[in-house]
Image 1: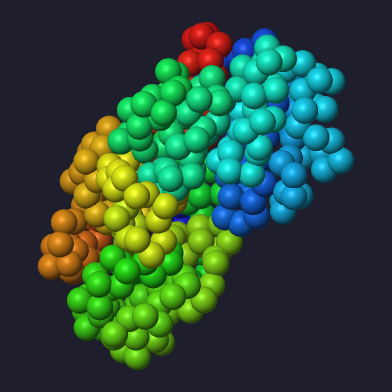
Image 2 (image 1 turned 90 degrees about the horizontal axis):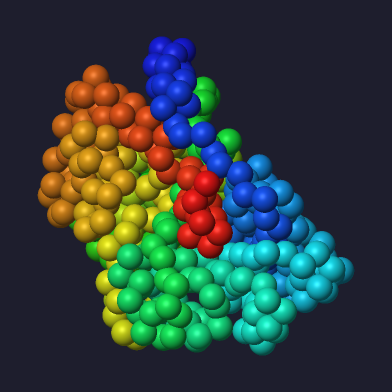
Length: 359
């Protein structure tokens, strides 16, 4: 089955490559400042760097103080790099670890400053301060655009995260990672409620659940043989399990969970998370909870499938496990849409077009 699946996926990848618009090029110098965090941010940093480099004349990579990653120039401050290279723009990922005084001094040097926020709306109590310091704010949450404008930044744009086609793509996998159903992520309380209701159904299937806090389940003993507890699965292994699953569940964290959010204004989440693109990029059927802006990226029922209740999720899991060809058709359409439209290169073209003008 691996060979048949890979053949169909390869045909879709080739079609997506033919239909993808050529990437433009800007004669600009860009200083990219990493998040300063390790996993799970470091893979995003690397994806941005690898996608940004072919789009600009020169890419300079800087780190924040106390950077826990191994990317960039550890002995050179952001200000020193800016003074030496005089970039046309500084793009910061996440921004929490870069002092706002540094941002302000770069603006005084005449350098355009931009931040791409990766955790909206969950940390808006912290990032609210960014509004009056950056020239451009790019947020992955559509409901946060007006919020940052109200905080003082006139140039706020909605640019969601994406996926790394070098990492999350169809690939052959061993039988050891093959499952009926897969879910990878932390056991936030909204997920615990849902999976407790699904537990008797899931216990009868070949399932993988991986992440921290899953021992919170009331039904933990029932699902324990199928849970990898306390793990932060790296991207390459995550992609293996996605490829080995017939169906991957995506469930967004709640934006009103007071235990884990810094979102006192209760800004609701409407935009899809990066998992949405990573799952579909592997050519596997995705069942995701409904987000109001999902239809801007996929067509539910055509290249992705959605659910709005535990009962509907259980029904659709059962249906698509029994209807292989229908499941595969939707997965392949999702793969095409993702490879054509939702790479980090796509997103960075949008960012550069906003800052420097389209090419």
